[in-house]
Image (cartoon, rainbow over all chains, first blue to last red; front, side):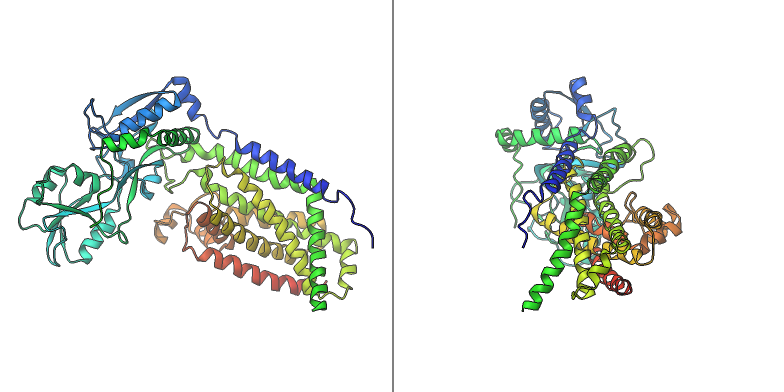
Length: 270
Length: 270
């Protein structure tokens, strides 16, 4: 029996190592220049709606969770944050209709839910804020079959088709309300059983204390989503930098303090 | 028991020969890395701006991923396809130089000789596919351990099926030159009509899809088994399926079984 040759696999291992080393090196190549461009300009532009409390409030002293978070992220990356308020954001549930362009912003915040529909349009970085369909009623329950519910579809990109199918399947009549004010007015109607809207819309209502109870719709039908910062598809180097900065902001405790200041804890289950 | 061990050692010997030969062959290794580098770095980055999702300009690409992420699983399939089918050259080589005759007169059953060869080819093809995973960071793809294990399982089954397909081709082609031309005329059309570089939007109905693309192309995509292999890997790696998720694994495993039987019939005639 011939003894096994020494270094029998050396050539194969060497070939393999060279290949792996080359691919590892290639994986560190920057796929685009988005971060470098922002660093050269020294500024990162964010587009937000005029108001989407508590994510964007419009109050300079207390600008909102997303604005403060973006400021912290921009500081981490070494850039200045420039906030561009656009009324077109939130004008429609489909982000494609917001008519945003790269010239206006690098990041979109203040009402972007991390849903599949949004991700068809943007790359998203989820924030701790949680959203989903919630209901509000005096009894803490939805009405019996045949009742009427007010519905504010909102603009965060939640699945409104699924919601309307579910409302019909449960035998309720949906009364559409185009604005939070009309939604709130509808809730005061004694003929109405309940209202359904996105979580932050319901949070922003001035409901009489003790008269109304809010609760999530069943999670098996309506999954919860995280709100997100949206970046243009293809801006991968910028996305990585923002995601890393968010991670650092989170580890340093800054994120928790902003979260606490705006009381972002998700409402309890009922 | 002793016979089983002897047969297993025979299969192992044939497998090891294929692995040794492939890993010592630098040209094969170069082919294994040049494809992913060209496709991901050049084509992926080059086409990325056209799929960015800005509102300005015509944007049709609405799936919730970047183009690089979308392309990434397809490049793994491409690498596996080339390596698996090119493996058949070794069958022609063995036949031309008499090695196959020597092996076939051994007491090993032909089915086990073929199994050893196919397992060798599949292992090499899976390694070539696995090399692409090193570029996951570049494509902004994050893989967990379970995703990785599932992807490797699918990649091995696909490699096995395609290696058997290569053997089927080799049993019908008599020269190296003929096989080179033939393999390219098989690989490239299969790859390009597998929805590898453009998505069939799963939200569209068949009629709408046929309006967006010529019907013959949609038909080609839908009858191509590689479509389902790409879809299975996309589902595992980036969580995006254009077809029901069980289609992909079902087609891959069926392909592996059918082509092995077919290859065995051809191999028995050698």
